[in-house]
Image: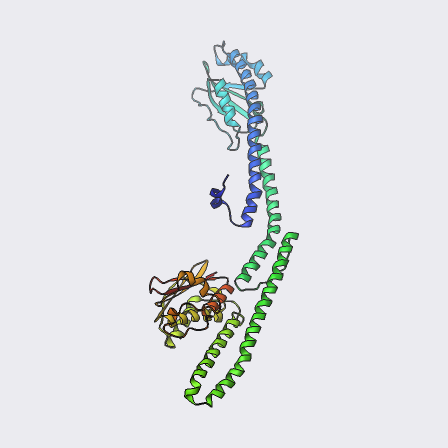
Length: 439
C-alpha cells in the first residue's frame, strides 16, 4: 500500500519524528485502556449498582402508596428507610426540586442519571453534587418526594481516579523520555549543524559524542573535513606555485621582446600577454576563498559598492532592484570577485549588464543579466567547468578568455553552500546568471 499521501502531513525534523514515535503509542494505549475500562468495567458495574438501588427506591415508594398524608407516608417507610440507609422528605409546595448538578469531571454521572430516568419514569431531577451524596426527586400523589442516600450505592467510588492516575504517570514518563531523547538527539543535531556550516564554507568546532553509531559518523565527518581542507590547501599551493614560478620567465621574455623591432615582436608579445592572462586566471582560481573568512555583512550596501566601483571604471552596468533587508554570512572579497566576474562576462559578450538582488529569510539571490548571445541550455553544464570554451559566437566582441570565469564563480558559490544557475534573460534576451546562497 502506498504511503505517499501521508508524507505532506509528517514532520520533517528528526526531533519531531522521534517525539511522534514516542507520544503516539502512549496516547493510543491511554485511549484503548480508558475505553476498555469505561465500557467493560465501569459501565457494567454502574448499571448493576444503579438497578439495585432503583429496586430499593421502588420498595420505599410502594410502601408510601397507601398513605393519605405526607406524614403517614414518611412514618410507613421509616423502618425501610432506616434499613436501606436513606433519608426522605416531601418538598413544600412553593419549593422547586434542585436542578440536576454534577461535577464536570464526573464522567459516569450521565449514565447514572440515564439509568434512573429509564427505570423510574416519575423522576423529576437527579442531583449528584459530589461523590458522597445523591438527591433524587420523585413525583408522587402526595407531592415531590426527595430521597437522599450514599452515592457509592450507584457507582464505584471516584471512578475518575484511574484515568487521572494513568494520565499523570503517562505525562510524567513521557516528560522523562523527552529529556532522555533530547540528550540522545543533541549529538546528531550538532553533527548536522557542523556539516551544514562546512558546506557553507564555515568551520565550527565539533567533537564527536553520543551513541557509538553517532560517534562513528562524527569521527568520519571530522576525517572527511580534514581531508577536504588538505586537498583545498594543496590545490591552492600547487596552482599558486606554478603561476608564481612562471611569472619570472614571462618577464624575461617581455624584456627580450622589447629589444626586437616592433613589427617582429608584436605576434610574440601577443602570445606572451595571453600567457600572462592565463597565469593571472590560474592564480585567481587557486585563491578561491582562502584569503577571507565569513563575516556578517549587509548585502544591500555591499552590492551597491560593487556596482558603484564598476560604473566609475566605465563599465555599462546598472543596479536595477534590491528586494529585502537583513544580513548574510559571506566572504566579502571572494563573493565580490564572483559578482565582478559575472559582470565582466556580461559586458564582454554583450553591450550592458543589469544586476538585481533578492533577500528572503531563507536565501539570497544575486542576478546578473546581459543582452549578449547567451548560452544554449545543453551547454550550460559545460560552461561552469574549468578551462571550458564555448561556441565562438559568444566571442564576437572581445577575446575568448581562458575558460575560468564561470568556474571561479561556481567554485566561490559552492564554498558558500550555494549554487550558480544559468538561464535566459527575459528582460534583455541574453544570459541570466543567478548566485543563490542559503542564509
